[in-house]
Image (cartoon, rainbow, N blue to C red; front, side, top):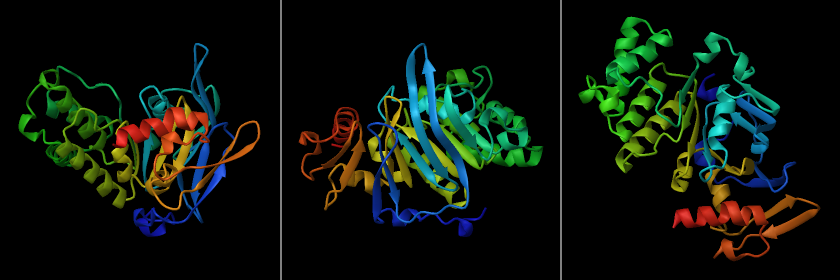
Length: 312
């Protein structure tokens, strides 16, 4: 579907008026631009939960990701970001709820549908004994790229991540940051429609972080949907929509400007409604949101304090 057919507001409309509504998940605030329409949804999660040994890694997660947008999944370490990503890729099955990716259950997608997805995992998963070029070439062949296209794409992505000059070096001889860039090249080589990046900028210097985000934005202009997890709060501004996750729960969802308003950085400050044993209304102050005693305990402890500290 071309960009002209999508009816979600462009990134330039991030500051549009929004409606804050109470979510069915306790302690969760959902935010939606008004009005929002979409002709296609890339990922839909309804009431999704994942339980490990009696612990809820993800609980009651509701999320709808429109096609052709950059979605940031932000939260502190251990918040459930990677579990959410693995549920989307189909490498994990949900304990409860439903996950739909590209129109089907991720664990049952056919090969053609899976070829439309690109995934960069959090940990290095390529072959250490193969060279940089061999790794990318191997991944491209798995996705069915014919020789001439494979030849062109492997050079393009390795130049993008600044690894073309070391293409003959074994992956095991690369630094941690260079291995990260190699995995990013492998995720991009087949030009996927849905790109899932689990902390792609971790371990990269600021210049290469900029390169990564510029490429993500370029892909968006081609209609690619990108889901990016990060611990860098400042990277929220690179996204069209942002999901805040803490302890496996969705705390907030909206544009970067809407989330900034929740922190009281915009004026006037919004009123946030939270449902938990009743309907309570809290107004976040502009100067110091951490000190507002009326803020919901979960938001105060797990989101506001963390984001405020990280953004200083």
